[in-house]
Amino acid sequence: MTPELQAKIDNLIQQNKILIFMKGNKLMPQCGFSNNVVQIMNALGVPYETVDVLEDYEIRQGIKEYSNWPTIPQVYINGEFIGGSDIMIEMYNKGELQQMVEVALAS
Image (tube, rainbow, N blue to C red; front, side, top):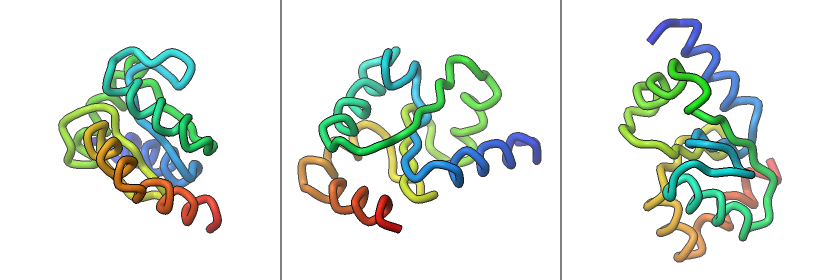
């Protein structure tokens, strides 16, 4: 990964309390896994931003290296990599995600 790409991803993550790297965007997810994450975030009713990896091949490949996670979507809360669709569903069902999001937004 180039230093420029690393800086670009760092910047995106630092500028947003909740950020999802996904296929498509929150208004039009382009895959089922990305849609799952959007539905969860919408159910929580919290502000979040998305980055459409389909629009930027460099970010699409770079984010996988950045997080050491091979799949999209990838969710970052308060600068911390949380995981993808399966992890988000699990955390949501256990009530852990709501708490994590509230803490992030309060900070």
